[in-house]
Amino acid sequence: MKQAHAAPRLHTVPRLHYGVKYSKRQIVAAVRREAELLIQEGQLARTKEYIQHSDMTVYQHCCHVAYMCCVLSMELGIRVSYRELIRGALLHDYFLYDWHKGKHPDFGHAFGHPERALRNALRDYQLTEREMQIIRHHMWPLTIVPPTCREAWIIIAADKICTVLEVFRKERVRL
Image (cartoon, rainbow, N blue to C red; front, side, top):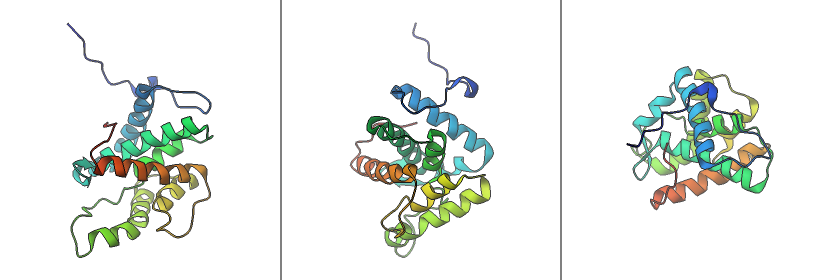
């Protein structure tokens, strides 16, 4: 009889470090760890109520982006703060509304949601400057001002990759 694997305890999940190639399972565990901490601390669980792309919730999308950010930085050998990268990715779409409804949902949402997500995140969490940059600039070039940290550049790429995969229902990771 096959036993189901229990979710790893938060204190047993190692933090990711530059220069180490982690398995998919290890990256997923690190993303889950940070997500669980953010759920305990604020309202991240509310992102499970809203659909982002296709049938993916905003929460699933943000977890997918966090995972993709880790993979990209490892594969490209880019030194990052994984904790800030993951937290920023998990909060990059923390706008807490259904963007599919309204007068011009795609247009207005595309330009305005980074600032709304940042306001919400600042209300609910203690953020670092990198985490704020990730959230504020993840829609560049629509946000006009480019980011200045590597983590924000990585999320810009990861968010676009994940969006395409999700829209065409080719997503690889669901947490």
